[in-house]
Amino acid sequence: MFLKIGDVIAADTLAVLRRAVDGLSFTDGRATAGWAARDVKANRQAKPTGALQAVTGEIEKAILAHEVFQAAVRPRTLTPLILARYGAGEAYGNHVDDALMRGLRTDVSFTLFLAEPESYDGGALILDMPGGEEHVKLPAGALFCYPSTTLHRVEPVTRGERIVAVGWARSFIRMADQRETLFDLDRARRMVFEREGKSESFDLISKSLANLIRRWAED
Image (cartoon, rainbow, N blue to C red; front, side, top):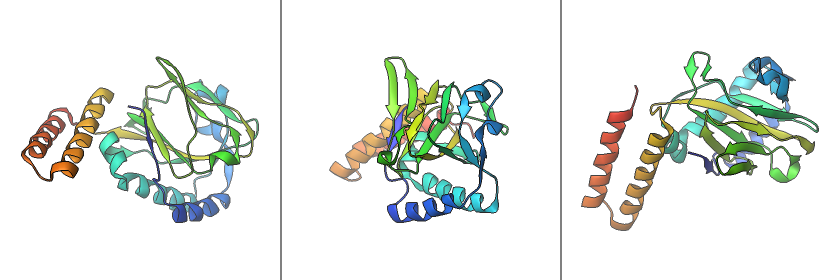
């Protein structure tokens, strides 16, 4: 499932985080790339410090607290987040994310945008889809998540600076189609609840949702 989630980070919190990000030290992003991706990666990533942990901790807390992210991803755990900057001429060529990161299976990849789209040109996240390429460039505070099996790239930045937090989730639900089914069922039961309250239809959908989670979940 490919999903855009808006307003994951509130505007006031985002402003504080952006000031904190500006105070971090950054280094060559190729240090964290696999041997093949290293040749196509040109960006900068924040050095691991206590200040970085404070920033990524706030971002992670906001992501995990978001109901849509929880329903869509069913996260068991997240990898440590990476803060990346792309200036003019920097990009990340076609690659697929590693299947294992720090001993964690990667099921869902996500990008949280920290710079407003009008502040930079280029820098879209481009996904290789069966029907063609999908270009993603979202407002600051919004998040895009997608299966980690997806071939993707970041197009070159030509003006300004692209600033993002990226991470990966191991889901309780391994298969992407099953996560999408559960997400659709959860949306349906919420719509029924808004229309009818706690009705017989709501209870039956909730029962089916819970039983499918029991069938598919890997705890």
